[in-house]
Image (tube, rainbow over all chains, first blue to last red; front, side, top):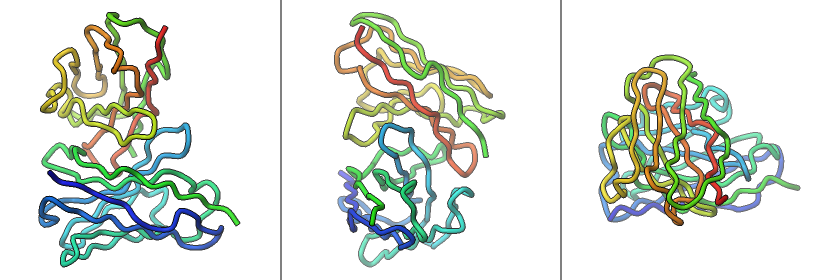
Length: 118
Length: 107
């Protein structure tokens, strides 16, 4: 069974960079797209972007100037960096595997709350 | 970006009720539409993919329909464990976009 686990600081100061890592276990990281989705408290899901194991990325244009994703296949990990954060970036951040032609998100991490505050 | 609009944003229903949630895309997405269920504090769970295909392990009371811009998720007989938030997502193009969610509450 594929499992994903987010890790990283739960508190980030305004203007700093949010950094999260997702570790994949129970399956290969190769030949999939891996995505990041976030959800502010009481609000809907927002797709941040995705990366494949060749390093090809797609970012949400609303965040593109601040987002960087990377992948480390040797560690079965992929990462998210979001720069110049503000309180509006406070959310639960999920990592997930995008699967197949229809881009299904079957496997998700449990989510990690990141709060932006001084 | 393709905008996804769900309606209603919330609804109250009783156990055994038939419930329908609609999702409209701002442009045609063929059948690149997935539905998710989310309980508080949990990650979303895939229910329906490609507009009308039931994900493995999902009860048959859930069904999806639609093509192009208009889609519907139907729960034929609401069960206690179905009280949750439901979200649609288009995967026709990037950025993948979600609807704002529909909260199904107990009447």
